[in-house]
Image (cartoon, rainbow, N blue to C red):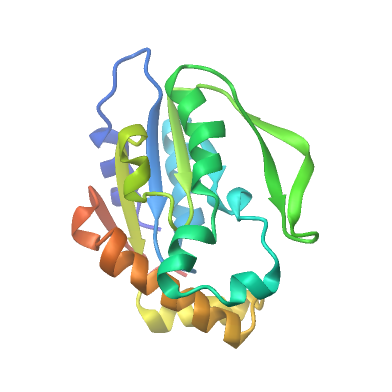
Length: 194
């Protein structure tokens, strides 16, 4: 991963000593968001909140029937992330939430917590949506070429081609209509990373 990009984000954060800074790391599936977020959190001593913990509980047939615009709005429960994580952290309070359980399509039973540390990195697709702008200090877009991302998706082997097609349509809609690349504070290309 690009150490210079991690350093750029780290030094670009403007915050008062007693404030929690929230950095949203967004990007297409398999762009390298998790790797970048981990490196950033390690560099700045921050905590990570994974957007995947806020996948919305929904019947598979309903999810499959969503249009790209509806998928971009409803695949993840950004309202719950806002209420249970971002707002408490902004107030300097402990955030407490139930993470989505991918095996059961329900919320887990064990609460997870994130303390109001100086920097919290929220990573995942759709985490820099405009509805969260008032709570996020910096938005980072992690990109990679479509061929690189597809190769990474195949290596993961965690989704069918049919699902990836629907997912990609929602991603494209989001980055064309809701959060175009030009609206991000920093753009990081991971195409050259392994």
